[in-house]
Picture (tube, rainbow, N blue to C red):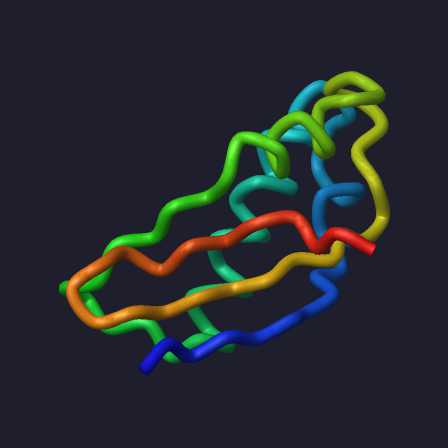
Length: 87
């Protein structure tokens, strides 16, 4: 049985670093937030969809979005998948 969670990830921490590193920090914040809220263990892997990367980098490195909505799915034997929420 798959565990599915929809979450809105705040990316305000990305705006505390120098502006040339904001998009990189936003991706790191996504990893950190999902690991915490999905209670990820050390032996589990995390897979982030390419669409999330495009959404973060769409306005360039210096202006990532303030928050992003994602869907996280955990299945036995597979990495935790993080995909962009489609409205």
